[in-house]
Image (cartoon, rainbow, N blue to C red):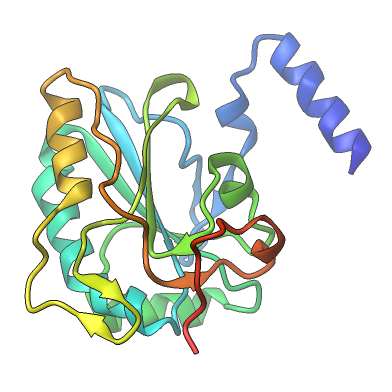
Amino acid sequence: MKSMFVLAAMWVCAGIPAAELLRFKTATGAEVAPLALQADGKANVLIFYLHDCPICNGYAPEIARLSAEFASKGVTFYIVQTDPHLTGDAAVKHAAEYGLKMPVVLDPENRLAARTGARITPEAVVVGADEKILYRGRIDDLYADFGKRRPEPTTRDLRRALKALLAGRTAPEASGTAVGCFIPGMDSLRKPEGKKVP
């Protein structure tokens, strides 16, 4: 582990962006760098996800809508599957079942969660140039708490953040905390207000 950090530091000193060091396989076997913007890209959105978390799956339609809405505006969405035991085939099947057409990144070692500070699924992290985190927090307030789902969200935090960023403004912070399941293996670093679905 120590040698890996030493090597990473050497690459950074050599002028290789840190974002380029974190490359991942998608569920279909493609290689992607979710922290590096695409050509002419404005931002990347990482949605941290657990395939068997009911709250995550409840958000799948909204995630799909957001991805479709902002794709033409230079925003690339990624689903980051955090279950260390999830296979590529199972992730592909899950994405098809829930209409998630964006790249599904497999991150069994939580490297992206560790880099971005994500702790809960579903939690959104918006990354800009040079791996700068522009927003981290809930998608919206559809879930007031566990077992307390509103008919419709009253605050659409992620959409509001993306619109602000595309207009050249600073993204407002999330107006509340994400409700969902802990990312496996990140419990020791969890936020005090975090909870786990029973």
